[in-house]
Length: 343
Image (cartoon, rainbow, N blue to C red):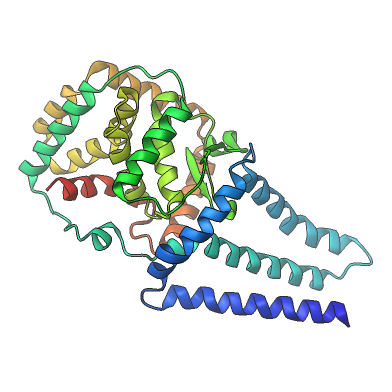
């Protein structure tokens, strides 16, 4: 009897949490309420609990969960004393608990007002001349901040990014010592082109162990923005750009400028005529062009076309389901955000 009562109460709690989750998603202002008042408490508790653990415990949790979800029904099917239908029901219940945990630990930040709405900044629709002026200013700053970066100095990057985000008002999480962790599945992440991730289960942010030193600061800042509840990939790129390019350290500044070079060039190819684009491209320092080519070869060597396409398709669906306009294309919105801030 006690066991049945326990199961009944557990499912009642799960049901109430599911209703609460969907209510926050659907009620106007619900996601903003969560992002501004609930997540700062939840995220602070989780990140301080997990920060002392030296490895990415969230990655391990996901691996074990996936294995359990797949293997437990098979075990029940093969074991004479286990009921397959009951095992499937338990797996479904476990997945529902994961759904609730994901959204209350971090995921309800999706659907909060975007950067323009939060700050009162007006988006701009730049004409060709306006974009051309911006692109040349950007390339000049990129060139002047070029330097070789050979070391991933996490302490230096952390102190610079934390200070910058505090000035920007992006300080929802108060972790005593936020520590980026290396993905446990780095080779797999490189196969699908993922350089970092936000692991919401215990308030962790992780980086691909293959990320080079010159990309480390910007990637760190991008994922740290996610830890502070920024869900849009474009906004995370934008906050990372601001934090790194305002640093007193030249290597960190270069990482920030270099991180958006591809987005600026892609936008330039669409906004400028071929002659103006060629002039802009030729303005980029030869050393930076060589670095771009080296990076392209570095990641192409590790990338799997088939796995990468699947991952991109699934992640695009995930972002769109969670109200991120543009899906994976939202990464490129960083250029529009910079233009809006500078105008």
